[in-house]
Image (cartoon, rainbow, N blue to C red; front, side):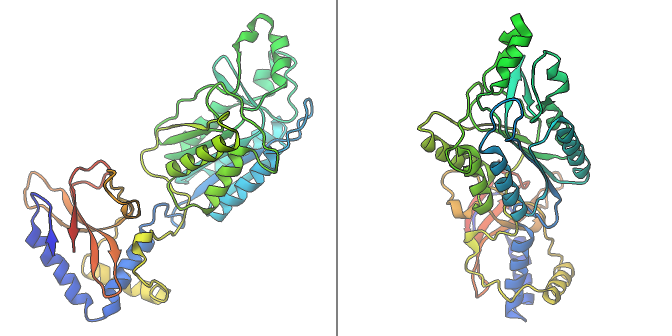
Length: 385
């Protein structure tokens, strides 16, 4: 094994790994199975261990303005995509103000104990005085007071989510040209200048990403088919892609710009503190060398757990994201195996073996990581293991 990591106790690490390998060699498939278990456990989303809750709203049947074609379909398709990904989904279609309020309260209750909260809204929305409002189907906006009684403030939903969960994602396809805004403008008189086009920019709290169907102050377009350009692309990639959310949003942006001839550019504000994945139980392509079928069942899982505990092989529940353009895309998601701590008493950071590929004969390719398991770590070097 040729390992290149400065300042690390290589002999100690190799001794540890060799002990593990010798023990596992008694049953050839054991080493493979342990690693398969690690891959299974250390997936990006850990959806089976995490509670993920979504509120999905689509308002089409407005009572005081022409109905919208896409929002209900958009919400139906998005709800289906999220259910496929293991989300608990609270759905609402063509909601009046009272029903909208109830759904938000139900959502708030369901978020208790959740790791991830998600909100998707398709329908009319508007900004007044820098505040964004979502429009229930029974809104008339014939008086200035309607802002308080007929509308739902977006920041109320955001505060509810950020109070309950550490990771939150909001999708807003609510920047349509809104005839109700003209009613409100007449009612507000000289204050009508406070009514802006589209939605206003929103600052996300730590751990929150807010995605808009178009850039602030712009108007999004409805699609000529079943879905709006934004929601159609989003539901497609949420349902099928195993990429991170940031990568999905890039794909969505490109699709929307192409469909609208660059008239609409989806935009987001993110303060997420880590990569977010919709996919659950996905094995990265880099592990394709392992034949996982038949290795992982309830009986074997129990044995693997006992094996790991006996030989002190911890199973960390996080993901390492390797920075830098020089790292191949298919090697950017890894499993990690803690090996040993440094001997220096003033620096008790741990070393980690990151296996990027496991072969059928039990050999590994991967990296050593020295230092804390954070994406910005500078101490990551290729190794031939």
